[in-house]
Image (tube, rainbow over all chains, first blue to last red; front, side, top):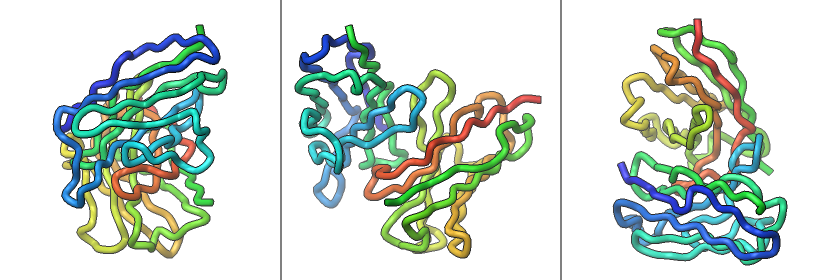
Length: 112
Length: 120
């Protein structure tokens, strides 16, 4: 299985400050069609996950533009330009290029 | 807007079969463009993809090798539902179970999740 390793696992951030989460895969994530199926999900307390980013850098409809994704190969990053209170929760990266699809361990973002 | 809703028993005895159903609205499970997936989250832990099935073909499914011998996912177009069966459950199968629509290796719509506890 492809192992997805996130860092940090805990991320205390001051409101209005930027935040960054790293995700590293144990194998390259370029699929046979040339796409890289790396996704980011947000899970707010008591809620089901919500997709924020797909194929590395494509933001889902309704996702604030303060969220952005980048990376290639085996190294990927989710950035939040200015953290707001509603961003509290756990963030997961997930690869959909190799079966079984796998998730990172999760990064818990909290407000300082 | 596609919506998914899980249903099924919240308590299952060890060694029995866990059965859950996901009802889809705002979209058709008969659309071959999508895969219909189950994902679970044990208490306090991360997410594990159980498997997926597409209506586009009877063999168009894939199960996580860690669960493959115990999992069956089926699609019922007449009810616009898909289902999960997990046999021979143990306490390790206690989790929140989510259904979702999978498009190109990503879940774009999730159900709200249903808690299943395995206990005698």
